[in-house]
Structures are given as C-alpha cells and as structure tokens.
Image (cartoon, rainbow, N blue to C red; front, side, top):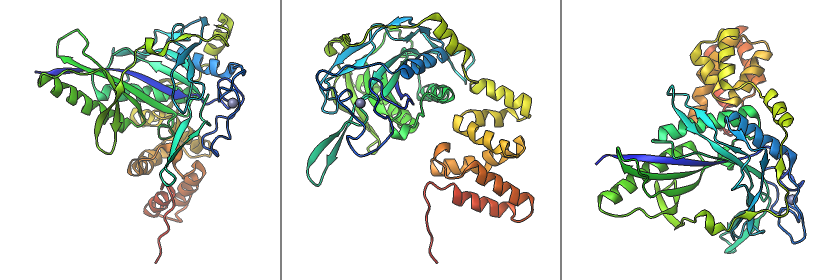
Length: 404
Ligand SMILES: [Zn+2]
C-alpha cells in the first residue's frame, strides 16, 4: 500500500525585543542563572503583568508579512499546566482570539502552491531545568521565563519533509528580514513542533497524528519526519494502531520515542487572562506598520538583478539569508564591485559555511577582512590561492592553533 504523509506545523520564534513580554527584565541569552528575572516573570503572588508594546508590534508585523487578517480586538488566555520550569503554573497565550489569522505563504519552489500560516499569537517562554550529574540535583533557571514568543501555526498542508523545509526557510527569511527574531535555531530562538499522520494515498480522511516537539535544526526536522512517517506506515501495515501522543526525537539514536499521551486544549483549562485587558488596535496603527514594511527577499532579489546586474542565481543565494545580504551590503559599501563581492561570497564563503556547518552570522570573517583580502589579491601581494587559505583560517568556527 502507498501512504501519504500529512504534516502540520507549529513554529515558535522568540521575538528580538530588549525586554520580556510582561516586565522590564532583559531578554539577553545566557547570563548567570536567575539573574534576568523579577517577581513578575517568576509569577510571585500579587504581581501584575504589563504588555510590552514592542511585542504587539512585532506580532502584528509577522502577521502582516504572512498575509494574515489582523484581529483588531484580541485577547490573552491562560493555559494552565504544571511544569517545574514554569513557576506560575500557567502560560499566558492566545487561544480564542489570536492577533492574526488566515494567513498564506507562497511556495518559493512550486508555482501556485500556497501554505496556510495562521495565528501568530503571543506567548511567553518557560525557564529551563539543568541537571547536575555530580550532585545528582536538578536546578531551575528562570532567565528565559517571560521571553516573548510568536507562534505560527499551519493547517495540515504539507506532504513531505522537503515541503516543510521549504516553508521553514521562507518563514525564517521573513522573520529575519522583518528584524523581529534572530532565528538562531541552535539557541532555540526558532523551534518547531511537527504534527504528523499517514493515510492511504487517495484517502481524504486524516489519520491519527503524533506530535514531535521542539525540533531545532532543519536536519533534525527532515530526519524526524522521514522516520516517523515510516514508523506509522509500518505500524498500520502490521495491523497496529497509531496512538495520539507526543514523541521525542533523539538525534543520536535517529528515532522517536513516546513521551506522553497528547493533551487536548480542554486539558489545559484555558480561560481569559483576568489581569490583562483586551488588546485594541486602531486602523491607523496597522496602516503605519504596513507603510514601514521593509524590503523582503523577493523584492531585493529583483533589485540586485536589475540595479546591480547580478545573475539570478547569485541574487537568489545572497538574498536567501538576511545575514548574507547584510554581509554583501557591507562589502559593496566598502567599494568592492557587486559582481566581485558575489563571486567571493558564493565561492569560498559558501563552501566554508557548508564545510563547517556554520550560519553566516556565526562566521568569524568580517566584511572588512574580506575587503582587505580582495585588495591584496588585486594589488598582486598575494595570489588567489593564498587568499583562499587566509579565508579558510578566518572562517573557522573556532581558532585551532597548530604547532610545529
Ligand atoms: Zn521580570
């Protein structure tokens, strides 16, 4: 029997605001445990939350860029659950009246293919638990409590891992161009829950789905989808039954494992958040945001072709990631012709990024260093080959000192 995989996604992106969603604690990553928190974000009795204006603005910007209808009067809800890294024992979220609904994202690869991308709603992050194996103790660090998140949910629109990755790449690009999230997957500021079921090809009914939570690399997402689709298909072919549950993807074992049976919304006893009044957005406010919309990837790609004369391929690669665009802009601002800058970036630089599995923004090479290097090659002080070697040394993830 042939099986069709059906996938829906819930993506959480941390918003790049300076302060948390309901208090003025910093959102900076890291820091000594429990130094970025206060009575509000640790949920002490008697404290009152105040909504961060910037969070509302960023959520609206995301909603507009995803072609959503913005809810002019939205509301917060309490999602109740106990977890040791959530001292309030509830999360303030938006269930019934989220800020943005009914969005659409166009597939960059297949003409006419569109994915739904509704409901970017605001939530607050939880802290984290750190296990100390020496003392055999688990400790709680509440620094991340109350860091603002936007949740972007899709319908079960996807049929393969490739389609999911194409959507996530596009979503990441949109959030980065808007400048509202740094989307660092390895730090967890962009993470994805994958809902997956299988059904006989041609069937219109949805099968029972499982959920894989907090996947934080494209590679893990693709492998988890392939594994889970195969597991469910094999289970059904043997006459078994898929259980609705949350499963954990183990990157080292290359498999998913059952975590707990999946809760439904009613298990969380959602109710309207009594401490926060509904959010009212005026048409002028939204008009202002629409007017300030920055140039996005596709528009910039067009401009690089027409204004700078870059080939379509080059323009596509550079504008595919906001960090590459920023790098390119700086290099050309320092006087390097566009085509020359693109050649260096698409050749040596892309190769190094791939080899080291680096994100452009984590690279040690600065635009100024590249410009200097190009200048030395042009002046005949070093040849292209030596330049490539210098390039390699500068684009390593960490310095490695070689003796002898
Ligand atoms: Zn706080």
